[in-house]
Length: 284
Image 1 (cartoon, rainbow, N blue to C red):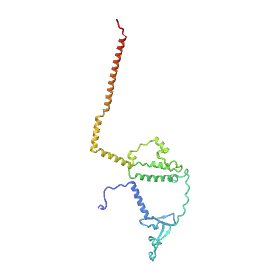
Image 2: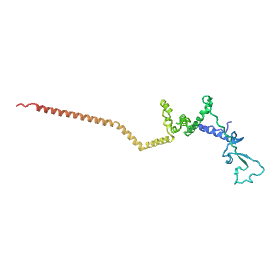
Image 3: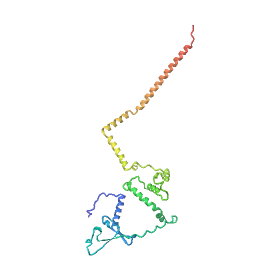
């Protein structure tokens, strides 16, 4: 017999960020319910403070509930004590011993790979990784399949700006494309431009979609559609009007040149005949 409380259907797939939050919440709940040894103090057990389970009066104090025969509320004075502390013994927490000075870092040339990573790589890389995850969360990388955020680019720019061995005054406002070795790399291996879907932000994409949709609504309006249809037919009918006008003026100019040439030839021949008549002698 099947379990009547089981439901069969589409199970929602959690995103990576939702899984991380669920694991963190489970660990945090277990962290509140158990005690652990405080090695930095003197034989004390620390209970995780929770506002839904504890009163703020006991925060940071050593608490012991005393069991006595008399009623502890008979001699309670609200002007001196807090009602939440009735029946409790509160003591200040002992101060932890002084922290020993950190050990000097190992020699980078003779230490093991693990020691080199822990002493020289992780102290610089871990803050950069944390900053990258925070920026990825702001860019909603855990909720989408495609995004424009590039973790390697962020780490490159972050580590270049926060290099402890260099002065940071001239690097605070430097962008990724302005870093010298990045320029050299991009000159040899240029990147393809990102598609517009990744270049635009949500506000820019929404503005573009809204503008195109408003244009579509205007174009499908009956009066506007009729006007656009007339314009299209007029353009098709008068597509070669420019060529016709140019051809007309070329023919007109060619005719004018022919007439001018014929006129000049006629005038030249008449002048020649007049000159020949004047030069011929008359006989008596």
